Structure formats: structure tokens, C-alpha cells
Length: 354
Picture: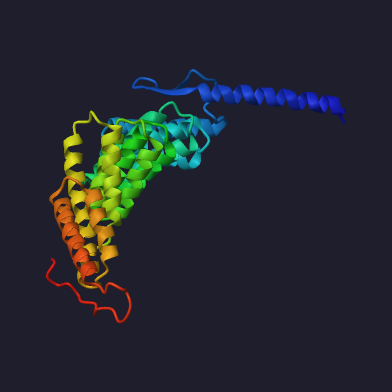
């Protein structure tokens, strides 16, 4: 029986050999020529030996021959056999890549995306990583723009913007630091807006400005956030939370990007939202004055209407009503009992002030 030293030495040797072989496999590339078919280049192994290597190479050559002859369906079948039978080989990665492109040529967008996804998941060190993410982005964008997935390569299915959203989210997971990530978030927002899912659109835009604040798309994200919140405003008689959010993002846009070509559009949006919020304050103030005779509360909201939009017609109206309110309070004070005793004068609702 070998001594512990000998066993340790053998284990070290085997480990070095395995490391060397795996490095050779990682460096190897598959190259195809019409004359010689597929061959490995730049490495020492395909990941297979013996009959497996022979059979895998035969399937790869047969698939490529079918592909070159224009028989995409037959090529896909053989490439699929390679991916299922020789998962850990160099051939499997190439088979997934070629199968994905063939499915894409047949407008089988769902299966093409899935093949690309398996490729980047199982073989994340592939030198084609950026190219594959780009292909996935183009598939998602095609679906968002109305392309129809074809079942069996010729039967068109329904439009699938929801599937586009799923694919964009997957791209964010695959390559969060790539140039495609902020584009994916902007398109997720666009897709949700098309589907009238404003809350989800806001979430995507919010992720965009938080994760990629220095990206060239950040100004558009801020403006779209403001506009999306503005679209949720129902009127001055309703809750103004969306109005306040819209004002915040319009102001942020104008502060952060003062030279942007859309500043004038943001100014118009900001003006509309301030007008809306000021009108809301006026309605509350009128309610407190006319329905509750609560002059203190009315004064607070008239002043808030002025603060929200000081240069507006609403502010001018609020100032006028404050002056008339002051006059009414002064009149009431002058008619109150001088000694403050006895029964006070009946409280009368002043209906003619407004």
C-alpha cells in the first residue's frame, strides 16, 4: 500500500494534470471549414474521448451540413442531440449557439431566447457573452414592438409584450453592468405603460435612475417618471400624492439636467402640476370657509395655494380671498361685545363673501 507521502504526491500530480487539461479545454475553440468540417483549435481537448468524441463530431458535421443546405429544421434536431448527449463538451456550447440562431431565423423567438439563456448560464466564460446578451436584447425588443413568435417555425402566435418584459428582466440578471441594462429598464417601463401598468412602469424608471444615475438615459427616465406620475392625477378634487411626486421629478430633472433639450417641456409639466395642486388647496380652503366657517383653517390653505404657485392666477385669487377674509374678521371683531361678558352674538355663516 503506498505511503501517505506517495498518495499525496499522486494526488498533486493528478490535480496539476486536470488543471492543465481543463485550461486547454477552456482555451480551445471550434472552427468549421467547408472542406474539413469542425475541428478544435487553440486548445487540446473537446471535452470528449473515444466513441463519444467521434459521435459528437459526426453529429456536429451533419448538423452544419444541413444548415449550409438550408434545412434549418434538420440542423436544429442534430444540434439539439449534441446538447442533450454531450452536455459538458465544447461541442454543446457551439450547438446551443447555432441552434439559437437557427430558431431566430425561423422567428421562434421564445426557443431562441431560451437557447441563448442556457448558453450564458452553463458557459458564462464564453467569449460570445456580449454578443449573446445583445441577441437576447434584440429578441425582447422585437417582441415588444409587436413581433409574433412562430410555433413550429410557421404558425404565428399572439403578441407577447409580457414575455418581452420577462426577457428584459433576465438581461438585467445576466449583465447588470452592460450597456443593455439601462436600455432594458427603459423598455420595461415602456412595455408596462403600453399595458396600462403605471405602477410597474414607475418601478422600472425608479430602478433606472437609482442604479444608473450617470447613464445617458437618466434624463429621459426622470422626465418619464414625472410624466407618468402626472398621468395618474385625477383632478383637484382628488388625492394629490401623484401631483406632488410629479412636481418632485419635474424639479429634479430641471435641476440635474438644466441644459437638456426637454427643459421647456418639463417647465410646462411642472406648471400644470403646480396649478393642479394650487387648485386643490383652494378647494379645501373654500370648504373650510363656506361649509365650516373655520377661518383659521381656510387661511392656512389659501396661503398654501399661494406658496405652491405664487405667480399664478390661482395665487392672485387666493390673495384676494385672504383680503376679504381679513375684512370679514375685522368686521366681526368690531361688532363683538366690548366687555366680553354676557351672551355672545349669534355665530352667523357669512355666505356672501365668496
